[in-house]
Amino acid sequence: MTAPEIPPAPSTPPAGRALPVRRPDGIPPEAEGKVNLLDLTPAEAERVLREFAAEQGQPAYRATQVVPRLWQRPVRSFDEITDLPAAFRAALAERFALPRLQLVAHQRSSDGTRKFLFRLADGQAIETVAIPDRDRLTFCISSQAGCALKCSFCATGVMGFQRNLHVFEIAGQVRELALLDEDPVRATNIVFMGMGEPLMNWKAVDPTLTILNAPNGFGIGARHITVSTVGVLPGIVALGERPEQFRLAISIHAPTDALRGELMPVNVKYPLADVIAAAATFDRRVTFEYVMLGGVNDRAEHAMELARLARECRAFVNLIPLHPGGAMGFTPTPADRIVRFAESMRGRGVEVAVRKSRGVDIAAACGQLRVERLGRRAPRSAEDDRDVQVA
Image (cartoon, rainbow, N blue to C red; front, top):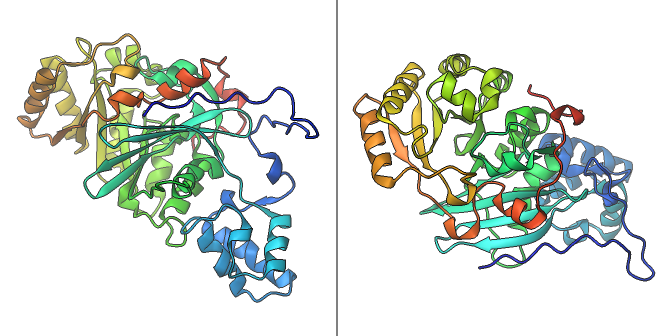
């Protein structure tokens, strides 16, 4: 399926209508002055709804009627919660907001992978990918619009950093796919491997993890939720301090500081030795993500060095064929060389998997669809977003 072009935002309002004001922080106009329930954890939402119900002279159980309709069985508006009295639904709409993400492009691959492009209230856009695999459906979700890390092989890095996403924009990707008019989809697994570095937006990612995992949120098991990072050390510590068994994936992509520094500028701030040490102290199994770049990081000595690092922290290694759409001037490693690389590591006692290349026919490289539809916008410094927090 070929994705439609993103319709341009109107420059003049239709006759008789005012043009909505775009706020630079991404808060939708309809949420102005209201409590955004989708920015709250389920426990927080239930608390404020119970207080509101009491204020309205309604029984406290009204809150427990509303909370499941936020994430478990989401609704587009309060009017759809028909087991509530009409007057209470109207009162909810006056006090609270359920902001939506605007779906502007949808592609479906021949292998079943589906890619979605959402426009946000300030005109930014983010991507979400749904990947089927037997009885699993994994959502690859975004945590930032763009990315500040400038990894040389990543399509998202090309667009630069725009801003952090709010909680409702991160969890909203999962919510919106459950609300699709045709063929709604629900995740069994979540990976924070879309646009952005999640551990540089911990302020929003932390409560989003709660929403994804909580029984009265999306109810996805913690072991089915993976946070991927380039190695932001304070964020790894913060994730490890949570009691749930969330998974950690670390983007390694090179087994030496010299090569990793060429590919990933963040290696200067978080050197490989420090990242491996943090992975070794993380109390759950860690996965190494390793994109195979032809002639760059795929030689026999690289396999030997990567195996040594993996043994230091008992890591599982995912070898990732470079997606042609996100190559950024690099050449994918041939399949037979990837097989030899994997066999070399297994021979050194490391568990390895070669990830399937998915969505090749639908621009499924992270950030690629956004760049194709919106073009490249002038990046902002990460410091321009005051909400940037590593932990």
